[in-house]
View (cartoon, one colour):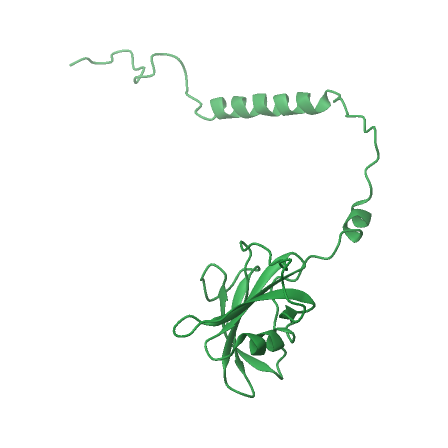
Length: 180
């Protein structure tokens, strides 16, 4: 056992310790560094060309295409809405698959944009009396059984599809004309 006969109390004779001195010194050095960087003059980039005003640039853009087409409330009632990816609930803006119940016949029709689908172009051998939707060539898919009848068309760069298990292609094209 070692006894401290001098009464230094373990301090080793260095005097009182000040634990707050080191953080205070570090803060002072950091403050001095920030002040010296801000005091030094900075080089400014010379702007050679004047950019057009942001408001003018945005005003000259064409309007964004409407992704989701809807049926008027007097024609059909919206019964289900899902994200193009299959999500339901609070939907993010973007492509949505919407199912409507027609007021006059209670038939269900589903309307959806198809973002990854190729555009529907009129083939060179198409008949003059073919299906059209909003003045654009439309392609019909007729099926018997579990596969629904569908009509696809491309307008403003987006391919859309309307489908139903009970309505034929000509009825679907007539309903598609009402989409806005």
